[in-house]
Image (cartoon, rainbow, N blue to C red; front, side):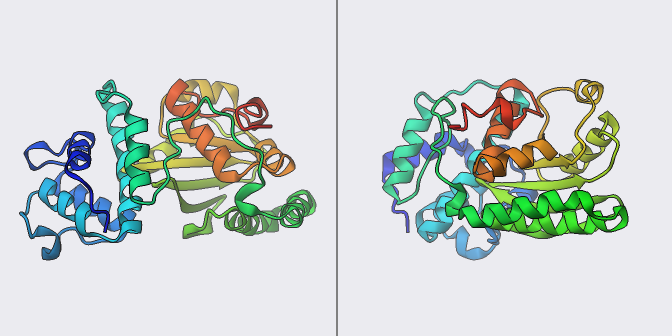
Length: 296
Protein backbone atom coordinates (compact mmCIF):
# COMPACT_ATOMS: atom_id res chain seq x y z
CA UNK A 1 0.00 0.00 0.00
CA UNK A 2 1.08 3.59 -0.60
CA UNK A 3 0.20 4.82 2.92
CA UNK A 4 -0.08 8.46 1.93
CA UNK A 5 0.18 11.03 4.71
CA UNK A 6 -2.59 13.57 5.26
CA UNK A 7 -0.75 16.40 3.48
CA UNK A 8 -0.09 14.13 0.53
CA UNK A 9 -3.75 13.20 0.30
CA UNK A 10 -4.65 16.88 0.43
CA UNK A 11 -2.30 17.45 -2.52
CA UNK A 12 -3.94 14.59 -4.42
CA UNK A 13 -7.38 16.04 -3.63
CA UNK A 14 -6.29 19.33 -5.19
CA UNK A 15 -4.48 17.64 -8.07
CA UNK A 16 -7.40 15.50 -9.18
CA UNK A 17 -10.21 17.93 -8.27
CA UNK A 18 -11.74 15.56 -5.73
CA UNK A 19 -13.84 18.10 -3.88
CA UNK A 20 -17.53 17.28 -3.53
CA UNK A 21 -17.04 13.63 -4.41
CA UNK A 22 -15.84 14.26 -7.96
CA UNK A 23 -12.64 13.18 -9.74
CA UNK A 24 -11.41 15.41 -12.55
CA UNK A 25 -14.09 15.67 -15.26
CA UNK A 26 -15.16 12.02 -15.11
CA UNK A 27 -18.76 10.96 -15.21
CA UNK A 28 -19.66 7.73 -13.41
CA UNK A 29 -19.46 5.90 -16.73
CA UNK A 30 -16.12 7.31 -17.89
CA UNK A 31 -14.64 6.90 -14.40
CA UNK A 32 -15.39 3.16 -14.52
CA UNK A 33 -14.22 2.95 -18.13
CA UNK A 34 -10.94 4.69 -17.28
CA UNK A 35 -10.11 2.28 -14.47
CA UNK A 36 -11.04 -0.76 -16.54
CA UNK A 37 -9.09 0.19 -19.67
CA UNK A 38 -6.05 1.83 -18.11
CA UNK A 39 -5.59 -0.06 -14.83
CA UNK A 40 -7.70 -3.20 -15.38
CA UNK A 41 -9.66 -2.58 -12.15
CA UNK A 42 -13.40 -2.58 -11.59
CA UNK A 43 -13.71 0.61 -9.56
CA UNK A 44 -17.46 -0.04 -9.21
CA UNK A 45 -16.76 -3.15 -7.12
CA UNK A 46 -18.04 -2.79 -3.53
CA UNK A 47 -14.52 -3.29 -2.15
CA UNK A 48 -13.68 0.30 -3.16
CA UNK A 49 -16.84 1.77 -1.58
CA UNK A 50 -15.92 1.02 2.04
CA UNK A 51 -15.82 4.75 2.86
CA UNK A 52 -18.58 5.81 0.47
CA UNK A 53 -19.77 5.39 -3.07
CA UNK A 54 -18.89 8.76 -4.62
CA UNK A 55 -16.09 8.88 -7.17
CA UNK A 56 -13.92 10.93 -4.82
CA UNK A 57 -14.35 8.56 -1.86
CA UNK A 58 -13.71 5.49 -3.97
CA UNK A 59 -10.65 7.19 -5.43
CA UNK A 60 -9.23 8.05 -2.01
CA UNK A 61 -9.81 4.53 -0.71
CA UNK A 62 -8.19 3.06 -3.81
CA UNK A 63 -5.10 5.29 -3.41
CA UNK A 64 -4.71 4.31 0.23
CA UNK A 65 -5.31 0.56 -0.09
CA UNK A 66 -4.31 -0.64 -3.58
CA UNK A 67 -0.87 -2.22 -4.13
CA UNK A 68 1.90 0.31 -4.64
CA UNK A 69 2.67 -0.59 -8.31
CA UNK A 70 -1.02 -0.24 -9.18
CA UNK A 71 -1.21 3.15 -7.47
CA UNK A 72 1.87 4.36 -9.39
CA UNK A 73 0.30 3.25 -12.67
CA UNK A 74 -2.99 4.93 -11.78
CA UNK A 75 -1.34 8.20 -10.83
CA UNK A 76 0.49 8.36 -14.15
CA UNK A 77 -2.69 7.62 -16.10
CA UNK A 78 -4.71 10.14 -14.07
CA UNK A 79 -2.04 12.78 -14.62
CA UNK A 80 -2.29 12.27 -18.36
CA UNK A 81 -6.06 12.57 -18.29
CA UNK A 82 -5.73 15.73 -16.22
CA UNK A 83 -3.36 17.23 -18.82
CA UNK A 84 -5.92 16.57 -21.56
CA UNK A 85 -8.74 18.07 -19.47
CA UNK A 86 -6.74 21.24 -18.73
CA UNK A 87 -5.77 21.65 -22.38
CA UNK A 88 -9.32 21.19 -23.59
CA UNK A 89 -10.70 23.70 -21.11
CA UNK A 90 -7.97 26.24 -21.78
CA UNK A 91 -7.11 26.32 -18.08
CA UNK A 92 -3.87 27.47 -16.48
CA UNK A 93 -2.07 25.35 -13.92
CA UNK A 94 -3.29 26.34 -10.47
CA UNK A 95 -0.83 24.39 -8.33
CA UNK A 96 2.59 25.93 -7.77
CA UNK A 97 5.71 23.72 -8.15
CA UNK A 98 3.41 20.92 -9.25
CA UNK A 99 6.12 18.72 -10.76
CA UNK A 100 8.36 19.04 -7.70
CA UNK A 101 5.45 18.12 -5.45
CA UNK A 102 4.46 15.23 -7.69
CA UNK A 103 8.04 13.97 -7.84
CA UNK A 104 8.32 14.05 -4.04
CA UNK A 105 5.04 12.18 -3.68
CA UNK A 106 5.97 9.53 -6.24
CA UNK A 107 9.42 9.02 -4.75
CA UNK A 108 7.85 8.54 -1.33
CA UNK A 109 6.02 5.45 -2.61
CA UNK A 110 8.90 4.10 -4.67
CA UNK A 111 7.83 5.53 -8.02
CA UNK A 112 9.67 7.79 -10.45
CA UNK A 113 8.52 11.09 -11.90
CA UNK A 114 10.34 12.41 -14.95
CA UNK A 115 7.52 14.33 -16.59
CA UNK A 116 7.48 18.09 -16.78
CA UNK A 117 11.21 18.50 -17.42
CA UNK A 118 11.30 19.28 -21.16
CA UNK A 119 14.34 21.56 -20.98
CA UNK A 120 16.64 18.88 -19.68
CA UNK A 121 18.42 17.09 -22.53
CA UNK A 122 17.98 13.36 -22.52
CA UNK A 123 20.90 11.07 -21.86
CA UNK A 124 22.27 9.20 -24.84
CA UNK A 125 21.91 5.70 -23.45
CA UNK A 126 20.65 2.97 -25.78
CA UNK A 127 16.89 2.51 -25.80
CA UNK A 128 15.51 0.33 -23.02
CA UNK A 129 18.90 -1.46 -22.85
CA UNK A 130 18.42 -2.49 -26.47
CA UNK A 131 21.59 -4.06 -27.80
CA UNK A 132 23.34 -2.59 -30.86
CA UNK A 133 22.87 -5.99 -32.51
CA UNK A 134 19.10 -5.82 -32.06
CA UNK A 135 18.98 -2.31 -33.51
CA UNK A 136 21.21 -3.38 -36.43
CA UNK A 137 18.86 -6.29 -37.11
CA UNK A 138 15.87 -3.97 -37.20
CA UNK A 139 17.71 -1.58 -39.50
CA UNK A 140 18.54 -4.41 -41.93
CA UNK A 141 14.91 -5.54 -42.03
CA UNK A 142 13.73 -1.95 -42.48
CA UNK A 143 15.96 -1.36 -45.50
CA UNK A 144 14.93 -4.71 -46.97
CA UNK A 145 11.29 -3.60 -47.08
CA UNK A 146 12.10 -1.50 -50.15
CA UNK A 147 12.74 -4.66 -52.15
CA UNK A 148 9.51 -6.42 -51.16
CA UNK A 149 6.71 -6.73 -53.69
CA UNK A 150 3.88 -4.21 -53.05
CA UNK A 151 1.25 -6.85 -52.22
CA UNK A 152 3.53 -8.35 -49.54
CA UNK A 153 5.10 -5.15 -48.24
CA UNK A 154 2.19 -4.20 -45.99
CA UNK A 155 2.36 -7.51 -44.15
CA UNK A 156 6.13 -7.25 -43.73
CA UNK A 157 5.79 -3.65 -42.55
CA UNK A 158 3.20 -4.80 -39.99
CA UNK A 159 5.59 -7.44 -38.62
CA UNK A 160 8.48 -4.99 -38.60
CA UNK A 161 6.50 -2.40 -36.61
CA UNK A 162 5.29 -5.04 -34.16
CA UNK A 163 8.84 -6.26 -33.57
CA UNK A 164 10.27 -2.73 -33.39
CA UNK A 165 7.76 -1.69 -30.72
CA UNK A 166 8.42 -4.87 -28.75
CA UNK A 167 12.20 -4.44 -28.93
CA UNK A 168 11.90 -0.92 -27.59
CA UNK A 169 9.67 -2.06 -24.74
CA UNK A 170 6.40 -0.65 -26.14
CA UNK A 171 4.42 -3.88 -26.15
CA UNK A 172 1.18 -3.51 -28.04
CA UNK A 173 -2.07 -3.71 -26.08
CA UNK A 174 -3.85 -4.88 -29.23
CA UNK A 175 -1.95 -6.81 -31.92
CA UNK A 176 -0.90 -4.71 -34.90
CA UNK A 177 -3.00 -5.88 -37.83
CA UNK A 178 -3.67 -4.91 -41.41
CA UNK A 179 -7.02 -3.43 -42.35
CA UNK A 180 -7.13 -2.63 -46.03
CA UNK A 181 -4.22 -0.30 -46.81
CA UNK A 182 -3.38 0.48 -43.21
CA UNK A 183 -2.04 -1.11 -40.05
CA UNK A 184 -3.99 -0.61 -36.82
CA UNK A 185 -3.03 -1.30 -33.24
CA UNK A 186 -2.51 0.32 -29.85
CA UNK A 187 0.20 0.60 -27.22
CA UNK A 188 0.78 2.27 -23.87
CA UNK A 189 3.33 4.93 -22.97
CA UNK A 190 3.58 6.96 -19.74
CA UNK A 191 0.02 6.19 -18.73
CA UNK A 192 -1.47 7.07 -22.12
CA UNK A 193 -3.03 4.62 -24.51
CA UNK A 194 -1.99 5.43 -28.08
CA UNK A 195 -3.94 4.25 -31.09
CA UNK A 196 -1.64 3.45 -34.01
CA UNK A 197 -2.30 3.86 -37.70
CA UNK A 198 0.45 3.12 -40.19
CA UNK A 199 0.45 3.34 -43.97
CA UNK A 200 3.00 2.22 -46.54
CA UNK A 201 1.91 3.82 -49.78
CA UNK A 202 3.46 5.97 -52.49
CA UNK A 203 1.22 8.98 -51.98
CA UNK A 204 1.71 11.41 -49.11
CA UNK A 205 -0.91 11.42 -46.36
CA UNK A 206 -3.24 14.40 -46.67
CA UNK A 207 -5.51 16.32 -44.32
CA UNK A 208 -8.48 14.02 -44.98
CA UNK A 209 -6.57 10.96 -43.74
CA UNK A 210 -5.33 12.87 -40.69
CA UNK A 211 -8.84 14.04 -39.85
CA UNK A 212 -10.22 10.51 -40.27
CA UNK A 213 -7.63 9.11 -37.85
CA UNK A 214 -8.21 11.96 -35.41
CA UNK A 215 -11.90 11.10 -35.52
CA UNK A 216 -11.11 7.53 -34.47
CA UNK A 217 -9.05 8.81 -31.54
CA UNK A 218 -11.80 11.23 -30.51
CA UNK A 219 -14.34 8.39 -30.49
CA UNK A 220 -12.34 6.67 -27.76
CA UNK A 221 -11.91 7.78 -24.15
CA UNK A 222 -10.67 11.29 -23.52
CA UNK A 223 -7.20 10.17 -22.45
CA UNK A 224 -6.43 8.44 -25.75
CA UNK A 225 -3.78 9.73 -28.15
CA UNK A 226 -2.82 8.72 -31.65
CA UNK A 227 0.39 7.96 -33.56
CA UNK A 228 0.14 8.13 -37.35
CA UNK A 229 3.09 6.53 -39.18
CA UNK A 230 3.25 7.26 -42.90
CA UNK A 231 6.24 5.73 -44.67
CA UNK A 232 6.01 8.25 -47.53
CA UNK A 233 5.31 11.22 -45.27
CA UNK A 234 2.67 13.94 -45.13
CA UNK A 235 1.71 16.79 -47.42
CA UNK A 236 2.61 20.26 -46.17
CA UNK A 237 -0.83 21.53 -47.17
CA UNK A 238 -2.42 18.61 -45.33
CA UNK A 239 -0.52 19.30 -42.11
CA UNK A 240 -1.42 22.99 -42.34
CA UNK A 241 -5.08 22.32 -43.12
CA UNK A 242 -5.37 19.75 -40.35
CA UNK A 243 -4.39 22.36 -37.80
CA UNK A 244 -2.63 22.50 -34.49
CA UNK A 245 -3.02 21.25 -30.95
CA UNK A 246 -4.72 17.98 -31.81
CA UNK A 247 -4.31 14.66 -29.99
CA UNK A 248 -2.26 12.90 -32.65
CA UNK A 249 1.42 12.96 -33.59
CA UNK A 250 3.13 11.84 -36.78
CA UNK A 251 6.19 9.88 -37.88
CA UNK A 252 7.58 9.09 -41.33
CA UNK A 253 10.22 6.77 -42.80
CA UNK A 254 13.06 9.18 -42.02
CA UNK A 255 11.96 9.42 -38.38
CA UNK A 256 12.05 5.64 -38.01
CA UNK A 257 15.47 5.43 -39.68
CA UNK A 258 16.98 8.19 -37.52
CA UNK A 259 15.52 6.74 -34.33
CA UNK A 260 17.44 3.54 -35.00
CA UNK A 261 20.52 5.15 -36.56
CA UNK A 262 21.08 7.44 -33.54
CA UNK A 263 20.11 4.71 -31.02
CA UNK A 264 17.38 6.94 -29.57
CA UNK A 265 14.77 5.16 -27.45
CA UNK A 266 11.52 4.97 -29.40
CA UNK A 267 9.53 5.85 -26.29
CA UNK A 268 11.62 9.00 -25.90
CA UNK A 269 10.97 10.01 -29.50
CA UNK A 270 7.21 9.53 -29.13
CA UNK A 271 7.16 11.34 -25.76
CA UNK A 272 9.04 14.32 -27.17
CA UNK A 273 6.78 14.49 -30.21
CA UNK A 274 3.78 14.46 -27.85
CA UNK A 275 5.35 17.25 -25.77
CA UNK A 276 5.96 19.34 -28.88
CA UNK A 277 2.34 18.84 -29.94
CA UNK A 278 1.07 19.82 -26.48
CA UNK A 279 3.39 22.82 -26.14
CA UNK A 280 3.48 24.18 -29.69
CA UNK A 281 0.62 22.48 -31.50
CA UNK A 282 3.08 20.92 -33.98
CA UNK A 283 1.94 17.37 -34.70
CA UNK A 284 4.88 16.51 -36.99
CA UNK A 285 8.26 17.53 -35.59
CA UNK A 286 11.02 15.56 -37.29
CA UNK A 287 13.52 13.58 -35.25
CA UNK A 288 16.38 15.36 -37.04
CA UNK A 289 15.03 18.67 -35.68
CA UNK A 290 14.94 17.33 -32.10
CA UNK A 291 18.37 15.73 -31.88
CA UNK A 292 19.69 18.29 -29.38
CA UNK A 293 16.60 17.91 -27.20
CA UNK A 294 16.97 14.15 -27.45
CA UNK A 295 20.60 14.35 -26.32
CA UNK A 296 22.19 13.67 -29.72
